[in-house]
Image 1: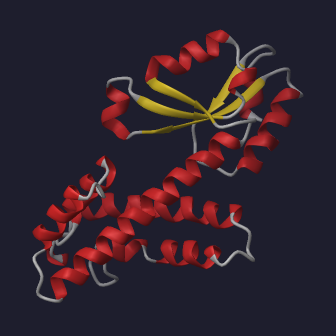
Image 2: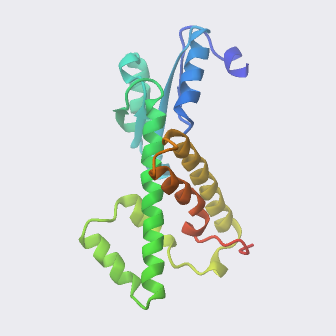
Image 3: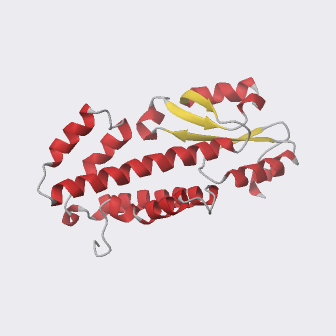
Length: 206
């Protein structure tokens, strides 16, 4: 493969993409046959955190990493969290993302619920802040709430569509990880199916 030709025995590959733990373990076994170490090192925090080296690294197999690899992670991350064995970093990232999207969906639903029943959405925001229900990511997301569909156009709409695509992919991974017999599996499916509405995108919003 192209990756195989681009690396040499003794090197280390870090995978930052949010993929399934099974993909990571398969990739690790494949890389091991080339004499290459491979670890999952998912990142969280967004673009602003990346610019100042304050990403959170959700890693698998930290105890097996060499010091130079850990030092490299610390150049762009302010916190390296050891999720467990190789593959668990991606499971951790999927769990983090599931919680994030659930909070976004709850905020969107509550906002519309209050607004359509004559309530003041800003009062809802005040209540959330006072009770400690708004984290940084969710508070940032609330800036999207209440934007008229007519204003969601062009590059802004494209950006939201891309976000929905990523969210859908992440929640599909969450569905894979959740036992299909668990009643919460249906909740994650519903969460995935709600992402278009959560981000204020309508089918006829061209």
